[in-house]
Length: 115
Image (cartoon, rainbow, N blue to C red):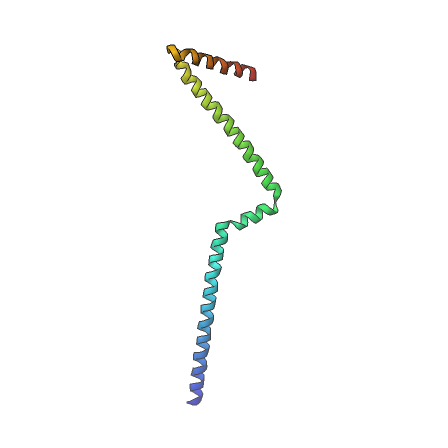
């Protein structure tokens, strides 16, 4: 019986050690999960990828600049065209008509000179 008692105590001690170690591993796992979530939020992998490839950044910024410039130009052209169409309908008004007619003449003059 004495040897069984020692064996049971050893088993209980080993189980307690395993339980403690399991708790430590779970806590480490939780901390690691928090780090993973934090790094995903920060997008560190994208930052490091872009940092190690500066030519990619240059090309992306060039394409973004061209796209913004093209969008600004097309948007301005569209807005001005719509305004000209709307203003042409108001040319027949007595007071505003002369001012709008002059404005349309100025726009037409600049449009012809730029082409």
